[in-house]
Length: 241
Image (tube, rainbow, N blue to C red; front, side):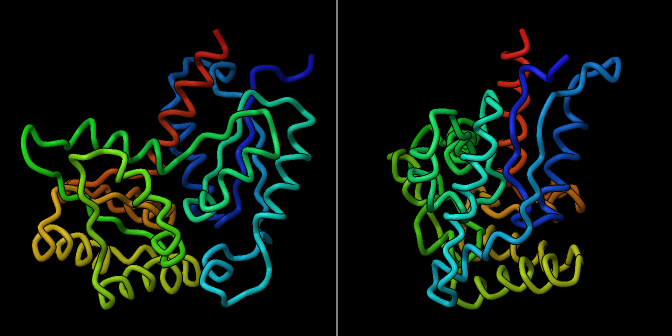
């Protein structure tokens, strides 16, 4: 019997973050037997060129070409939808979606909608701190979504604090497989206290990985990867019915 009612995860950007997403997905799926888990294909395309390097002009290798090829290759198998687990890759979202009629979930949009639902004030603007790669920030992937809500104000880190975020993502998690809890909490504290943020959006899956490892509950965050997992489960269960 061929697999039916499945989705395809476009991962590998990076691999540890993809592994974290799959772990969360399986852990949150309501199950009583092996057959209750979700049907999905995992594409761990680890050799997709770095998204931030391309966006910042440090590399001429266009990652969107590789991702589009993945979409076209796996669209032939007719998944119900695609899940794109890299925040920075959403810079190319429109052209990726144009490559297929199969819907692709939009992680930044989901995260911003949750931030508005859970943290919007009754009066005045909610200060939403954005923690992400330099590529994601430069392309305004999240800012464009946040600006759709008049009551949300995007707060970006200072140049110095952004370097701390970049070090946590690239130096610690990507290069050394190290969830730097001390630096993570330091960043959240600064955004919360010095920048007066009401909530911080974790707009990078490496930050989501650290959030999962630390189980932070001290500082208010919206974890984009976590919200993507929730929406993936919701859709997959709905399609199963």
